[in-house]
Amino acid sequence: MRKPEGPLRRGWTTGACAMAAAQAAYRALLTGVFPNPVTIRLPRGQQPQFALARTSLGDGVAMAAIVKDAGDDPDVTHGALIEVTLRISAPGAGITFHAGPGVGTVTKPGLPVPPGEPAINPAPRAMIREALTAIAAGLGLAADVAVTVSIPGGAQIALKTWNPRLGIVGGLSILGTTGIVIPYSCSAWIHSIRQGIDVARATGVGHLAAATGKTSEAAVRRFHGLKEDAILDMGDFVGGMLKYLDAHPVARLTIAGGFAKLTKLAQGHLDLHSSRGQVDFPALAEMAAGLGAAALCQQAIRDANSAMVALDAASGLPLGQAVAQAARTTALRALSGGIALDVLVIDRNGDTVGHAGR
Image (cartoon, rainbow, N blue to C red; front, side, top):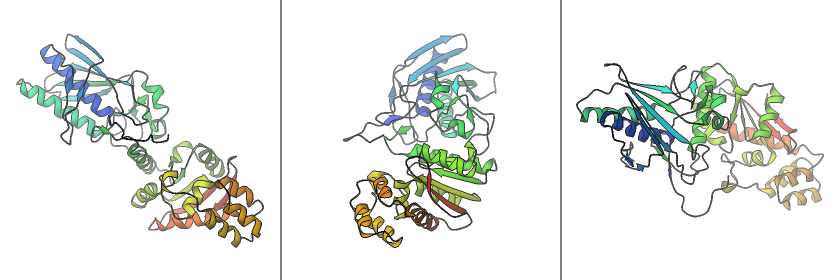
């Protein structure tokens, strides 16, 4: 999505919302009263307030729910209801975490929590644990309570995320290190790329393919016969992906993308977003000249208003192949060695127009 103009409003992670709901429910469980709004303290000292959307209180059980506000970030969980139910546990049981409807369960190694555990990441667990322990201590009690997090409709929302590919089944993850969502920071996307690499390494996937979009993903799966768990949705973040892979290598990597995106990679750009780099058409014309392009063809490429128009102008020349080779050279410079790399260039129809490397 295109970033809107002007100042952007920050939002709250699912982890911050779960912390606030858990804190409110625990207060009610111990005192009979829900604080509303509920104030929490985030790891960096911020103290936001959250309004409760739903509450219920019974014998030894309390539930509080908060509507997630992601600010101006295009977050698929914006508007989701984060419900946290607390039940008093046996003395000495401590604080335990459970996945309710709409929250996923981890089934593959390589993620921050082990298989079989609810997909509630370590940072939200620590935040919730610290908050509940402090509440109990203030009343002279031990925090022995089961924490169940639910997100109505979360299983359907999760289909729009990386969770199924990462082996998180049944719903969404409870995430967030700082508790704050910074709009369009892309940190969640980069984090998902890293998690995809971690899971692949932990499950023995030796050949990964990083694709810029759905068309290139389908093309590279056909070209190499890869399964879904071998695909990274790289988007524009080829530099961040290569940097992490250099430190956490796999045996083989394929970079697959459209002609326009990979032309930018061929021209030295490691961030492929249109706002941070454009195709250099004169340089592309020079590349075509090196392939024997006539003067009229070169001029047509210089005058092109899109990379695909330039590719059409170079019909009959192996321009896609030259772009694949140059893109591979750029990518190899970001790697210290040890990873077998090939690059696949795709046209608008999903057909391969260039392939470099084994």
